[in-house]
Image 1 (cartoon, rainbow, N blue to C red):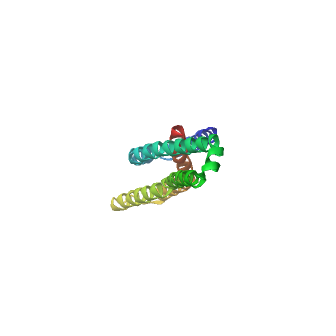
Image 2 (cartoon, rainbow, N blue to C red):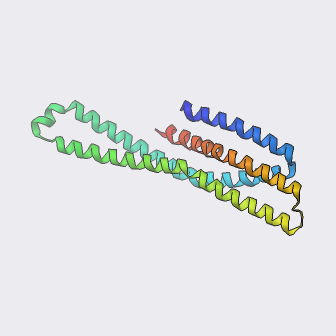
Length: 177
């Protein structure tokens, strides 16, 4: 719980500092860019949230079953040995562990999903920004300088956005367990 929270705070501070630099460089483009990325971040969150909620509920269910089976196994170990039912309990436990492993794998995959998503959104945004500027004959050295600063800032912000998103997902997922 503490590690994702600390990651979240640290990367939010870094993103805020870079956002301040971008506001100083070009307020108008920064303002439009911020709300563009914020919109797509909310879209991502809206579609992923319910899936992660269901994933957390399933994980709770399988962890509960595993604990229940393990408790039953430990309490009745003498009877299990006497009646030779250890295979029954091993199979139930193994099935729950397999389900827990699958859910943890899915959660891990979703923790890495924000990076390609935000990369695609950024590529589309920078392409549209350049296309609009070129169509209006506004591409000059100053625009190239601004685009370079925004591009380099994005290269540094993207890993932070991934960590922030993953931290939120981890906090949501682990709050269910």
